[in-house]
Image 1 (cartoon, rainbow, N blue to C red):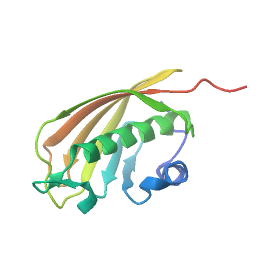
Image 2: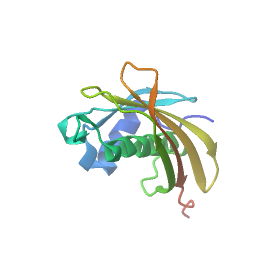
Image 3: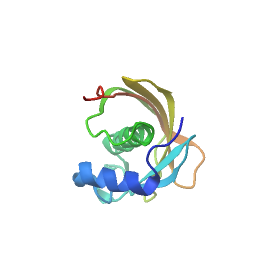
Image 4: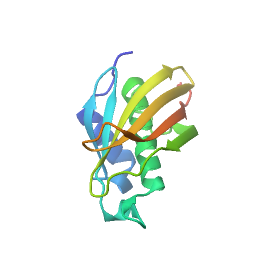
Length: 141
């Protein structure tokens, strides 16, 4: 598969279509094989016990799958999540950003399937694993 959008253009597109998450995520790496995306973790992402909340981890996995898909199909703001399965495996380290390693496993005309591993920055042990499917709107006109 060949990238249609680079990291900088994708970051601008994400800010344009999702202004409510501006500054929350960053793209560390983007190429034909992998996307590494960052959740700039702060107090709003914590839950009692001082760890990153499940909803914050889901958000990172979901946005990473969306970005990975968009990079291959082009700017399609109306692609939507149709499936997500996430396994929370260990407690993320408090005070550290979370990183998502996303790989598009299958890209068809209607669906994109992406595998995402989440890590606390600096650790090689995943804190969560997610599998997401995105529905790609049919081409217009």
